[in-house]
Amino acid sequence: MKVNKLSFFVLAVLCCIAVSSCSQQDYDIQIPERVYGDMNLLNKNLTKDLNSSSNLSFEYQISDANEYIKYNVYVENNQLHSKLSYKQNDAKWVDISEIDFNFKKVNYKNGMNDIVEKHAETLKKKLDIAIINRVGNILEGLPEILYKKLGRNEYNNELTLSIFYHLAAFNTSIRAYEDKSKDCQCGVNNSYLSGESPFFCAEDVMVSADEAYDLIKERSIIKKSEGYEFNPKSLLQYLSNESGEFVSASKLVQSPNQKIPDRKTKCVIKTHINIKQNVIFSAKLKPV
Image 1: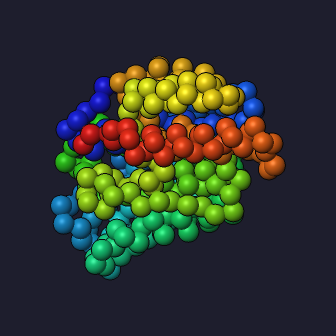
Image 2: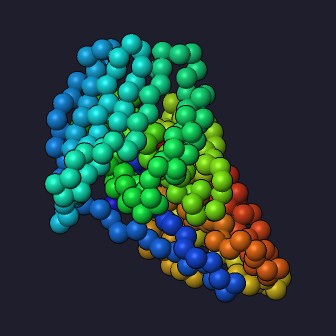
């Protein structure tokens, strides 16, 4: 897939990298299987200026599986209401994710991180991690499909881009599970605040796979020469396969799933944290 530098589409094509269990020798990664399906637009009135008639709704059926996603977003009393529903087979629809906010409020964007964090906590409490992972994986591909369905102008609309708030909440909840953290954290992303991108948590900023590869390979060589056990072979192979594309910085490196790591493992954890910061702040961000 080629990068489209002319639109927010480049920020929508998300490659999800989930880090699996840790060992002292290597940090393996698990690449979620791409989810394919068919989208059916149910209602669409994507007005340039949001008003009571503005709305968007669609259903998405997963190919070769009796799974369905339904998304509905509309405006009422200066509130943007969005709801994500999910069902399997012939079961009833279950509303699993709802996010509302006042888009007329001055600097409303400054508060979206708190809204996403609170919603991620709700997801973590009420849903099984298997469902969170599955729906999060499906959500990763929806922006690209919406872009193709709607075109650039209608895609670049607050109603359409609201899907990113739900994606961020699922990703935040997943990070909390993987890090075994009690808190769901979503850092401020300045490119969202300035209007340069849809909503992402800072932890999920997209970076160049090529620059991340060079940086991590360089750091691994340095750490090995210093006597640390650091061999990100699987990660480097993945980044090599994604050459020319962009990946989520936070999912390149995650805290290991060990409650009491030994001294050597702690050194590796620290190394990964340092790499994470360098990737986020040194590698080029995905262009818009």
